Structure formats: structure tokens, C-alpha cells
Image (cartoon, rainbow, N blue to C red):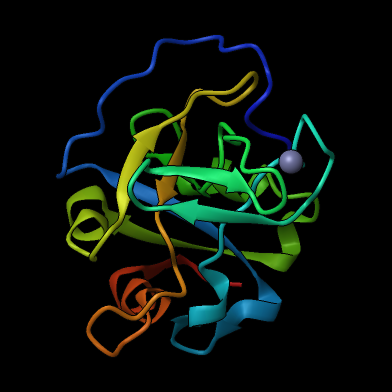
Amino acid sequence: MAQGNEQIAWPVESVPDSDALYYRVHRQFWAITGPNPGAFRDRCNPCSVCGDKKFRYDAMDKNYKCGKCDMVLPGGGMSTDWAKYSTPEDARKRAAKPAENAVAVAQAGSVRAVPGMLVEHNPVLGNRAHTNVKGDKKSAPDGTQIRVLLSRVFQTILPL
Ligand SMILES: [Zn+2]
């Protein structure tokens, strides 16, 4: 889904720890028990300066940057939908092919408890619920990859 460069249509709000986040997962990343670690990945728009598609997360700046020219790439992260403005069904319908997607759920506070993860409301045109989970998903600060920890936090709410 396109994100990041659209006109902001709604104010950015803070997401309470007790609120739910819905995460749509394509069937290729869906195990019997829920999302597998490979489902937890970031997306960024291509660099607006050099056009490169590679990006990296800068933990000091808390931003995604172009892998080539170091330009900050706004709007990057793992796209979830905040329950304040979305149902699980809405989250599934935003997929290109809804029937090929399951939906998982986690509390914002549980996501924030995973090392390095930030939960940031990022409303985009057509989706007030859009919320990014920012942070390097592949790092392994304590020997376990962040995306493995995320796969334990997110539970099935709408199976395939
Ligand atoms: Zn660039």
C-alpha cells in the first residue's frame, strides 16, 4: 500500500498502550498458529532524491534512511491499523487481495515492550487508522531476533 508522501488528512495522535493494533499478514507468512517471523518487515517509499529502493533504520535518529544517499525517508515502518479507527475486517479489506490475508492483533504496549520498537500514528489519505511500528526488525540485541519477539506478541484475530 502507498504510504508516507500523501497529504496528511487527520491530526497525528498518540496511541495508548492499552489500544489494539491490527496487522495484516499475507498467507505466505502465515503459519498454523499465526504470523511467522518473516511477516514482520518494514516498508519505505523509494528515495525521493536518488530513487534508490534500499533503506536502513537509523536507531539514533529513529528514522528510516536511504541506503545509498542517507536521505531521511518519512513514513517508513511496519504498517498496522489502530483499533480506534479500524476493525480487523477493515484492515483485511485494505489488502489488494483480502482473501489471501489474515489479521493479527497486539496491544500497543506489548509492541513497545519489544526492544527498540516505536508505535507512531501515521494517518494517510484514506486511512486514519494507519500506524507505523518503527525499528529494526532483524536485529538481535539479546540473541533473539526482534521479528521473532514480534511474532510472539501478535495473536490471530482473523484467520485465513
Ligand atoms: Zn537516496
